[in-house]
Length: 164
Image (cartoon, rainbow, N blue to C red; front, side):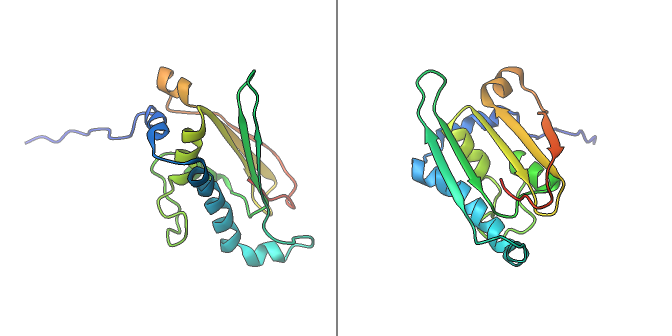
């Protein structure tokens, strides 16, 4: 008997299948809010130890533009993510280390973002970090070119900043 290895890593085209999830806009938005509130609850003590923190703020801005396309921008002032957490937020089948809260499976952000559109990005910096990360996911390009890698921009940030 011989044994062979079989790569069962999902094709990047899987991101496109999330468009077929049976969401309503409010349930897709709730996925992002869940991530923000869980980040806040997991790090509430650290956040309130900062000088000016008054509590969690989540902003949802929607812009309708028939020329370039509609845009939803969701921001929070929760704890933010370091690179390891950022990777899990983007890569398929990467649940968070702590799965007892709202982020049990680690699929919400990816599924909701893909459901809303073919182009989405995530930018974040964690409280105390001097690095911010940004990645853009273009579903149509992933499907067409079957890329297995995306670019992650790293830039400097103030250690006082914390957001996603």
